[in-house]
Length: 334
Ligand code: ADE
Ligand code: ZN
View (cartoon, rainbow, N blue to C red):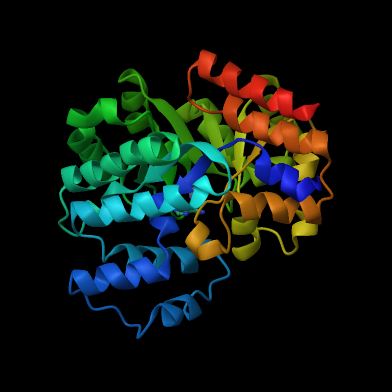
């Protein structure tokens, strides 16, 4: 079996996926029509042709514009179900997905509409494709902490419906420390904590995510490699990094996949995982991300096994569930 086929066959977990970033132009177009929302494109091809961004902010502007056609529970259901159906083909067996409620509540969509639509699809995804899932509520860091608190209040009746909170959107100028109090409240409520850090922002933001927010996982973390003391700390903590290779390429975090830091992270004893981030915008789901780095970085079978194992051991599954996946992967190693 060649290594790309082996990577495809490995059971995998995806730990860094924005549901709104899995919105394929065809579905965006169909939902816009159904909701009679005007979008400035004549066709799905037209939408795709507009994806000409080369940094995080330019991408986010298009991403939020696309999400604005989502209005009804059915829209959130269709978005989520389409993602699960697609990743079943990549042998992704567990997902921990982000959603950005503020993107929708700001437009007058009820928090409950978003929650119910997504959760129904996650439940059907378990039945129809055998994919287990957890949901992570992400705060938009370009908005205020007060706004994040308002969202957290809206989320209170649904605390059992998600596993944790995250922090995403425009990184530069919005350090993790801006959200210290709301993350402390989420921790008090028993939730897991994750934050995007070191995607475009400096290593200092990764330190803040660790020491001030006290996160359980770092999303991206690429720029940690600029600070040897930070690398040492991340290794000591066994901190999982949810790395997104094709996203990094598309947003020019790296100029060439051959220069992607994933292999270096493995060599340094860090715990990276491979994820798609916003697959509808960045040219690939988890399977395509695995295939691309396997080739560009000449990954070995042992490294692919480590990456698949990291994805389960870094998840928020129970210890028993993690062990079950780890031993299934070990069985494939022989
Ligand atoms: N929201 C969606 N994708 C994101 C990314 N890659 N970084 C920050 N916020 C995001
Ligand atoms: Zn992300």
